[in-house]
Amino acid sequence: MKAILLVALIFLIPLSSIISFDRINAQTEPSPPSIPNPEPEPIPIPKREPEPIREPFPGLTEEERLEKLTKENEELKSKNSKLESQVTNLEIQKNFLQTQVVDLIKKLENLNEVVREQIKVIMNLVTMLKETIFDGIIPSLVKV
Image (cartoon, rainbow, N blue to C red; front, side, top):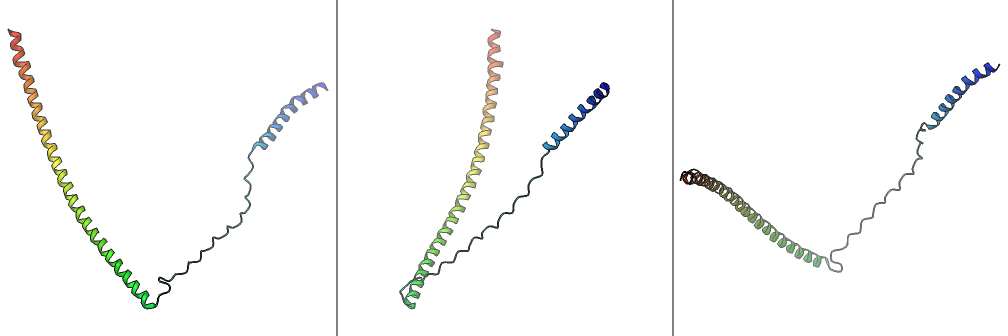
């Protein structure tokens, strides 16, 4: 009887631990996300009422309004023509300055070429001087 009890304990203890591990694993599994509650629809933004168009010259007769409007129109046309002439003058100046820049760039490139040639000539002169000093003067001093 003790042997049966001992055998039963040996089998039941590992089974109970396996069952408890299954319970722990089942509890640690993530639950599915909850379904969000529906949000109420947003309140639409009301359209603003357009401001009423005000009269250009209140208290004047139709002829006086027309006269003022034509005068303002003439002033605006003259300002417009002045601005257009300024724009054309600025475009002319821009083109002139662009051509000057192009000419200056060409001159700069030419000067760079001249400087390179001068450096080559100077380097040739330095090598000639070196050869003269080390091959001509120093060997003659050593022979003496």
